[in-house]
Image 1: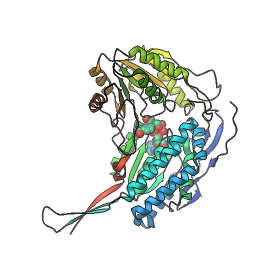
Image 2: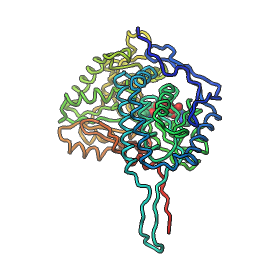
Image 3: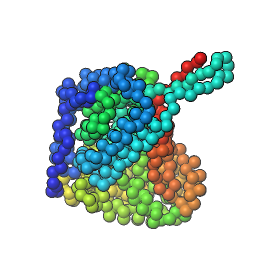
Image 4: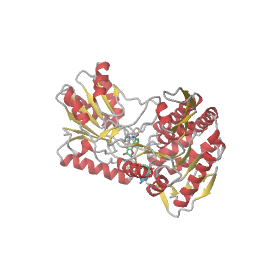
Length: 487
Ligand code: NAD
């Protein structure tokens, strides 16, 4: 694959950000970062150690407890968030290209998810911040003349997102935290360390005050160090369910709140009255987006008998039409998987589906071209039983299972018979009936004839998808703590 070199804002990341400046990390380990589309080195990152984490948390603590941020007004914070959004848009090209090179997301999709959507989220929380009330007075039921109910920033927030939508999943935590008046220590995934550092540079350019938005690059060990640091008051995490359990246990021990946004295995229920063309168009996007590396991907399609065969054939046709290749090329619809290891995991799942008797209709192999890169042909499995591993476990790759349901009730039962509970959809000619189905499915979010998550409404999961909520006023309130003052 030939490609014009894109200059990187930072190639070798050796620093943390604390006290408003970049400081050389004391951590001694470094990791070489590879471009998943070419397998060529892209840069490197240091893994911040305990002393680095301590420096970042101490800086954020100081900015909260003694700096002007802790005493800033909601309107002042809103101004900062708006400038942050403007600066991110100014660097749209650098940011979207960098994430594409780090983790393989096609460029147009990267622009949408790493610039446009995060800028919208920053402005949304700026708007909420402007209307934020800090205190209300209540008339006591018992003795006393009045009670002042006061909402204060919860403190220093640790922000730990994954690599699959790196800027969006960082900003959906950072924006409400800053709007609430918290300070933040941000640790991106190793894979997306460079774009994480760029985000901090952009915040600096936007005038986010010193110590308010600190940064430590690193992986699991750095993240664990951050979560157990006594200066952290709240953890905002998105990632794997297994990691969420570890973080939840640590936060339970420390008695601090943790928002855990975890894995998913979402079902799309297709009823016999669904408009087939619209359904296939919707599922073609929602099932395979970001090469299947999307927590809410509709990877279990549960169809009633009238549409089953046409859904299988239609999804297989969509999978075959995907343009696999350089994610920086405009025509590409499907980029590589994030890593060699991720592709091996997907391959093992496809092998397990075959071994358990599912029918592989298309894909499920490495393409002949490009010769380099962790590319994979999107797979569609038919005749999948809900007890099979490919139906129950999160694959995090472009593998869609189509399951049969005798009728609507069985379809709902199959959707609910799942360890996860993040998202789901129903496809039907009757949207009101679709809402009723949504009321019966145990997931944190659900779409009728589509799935457009909206920043104004709470987002999160149930069961093994975690119980936290982000987005909306609820997202902001989760960064505030309530205090009662009796007079
Ligand atoms: P991961 O759990 O391996 O890593 C996520 C983040 O946690 C990274 O920054 C990582 O360095 C850090 N980390 C790892 N171990 C840690 C520890 N012990 N303590 C503290 N931090 C630690 O997940 P991943 O592979 O990067 O992401 C994929 C997962 O994320 C999938 O399961 C996917 O479904 C999930 N996800 C969920 C949502 C959602 O909103 N529910 C959104 C996107 C992705």
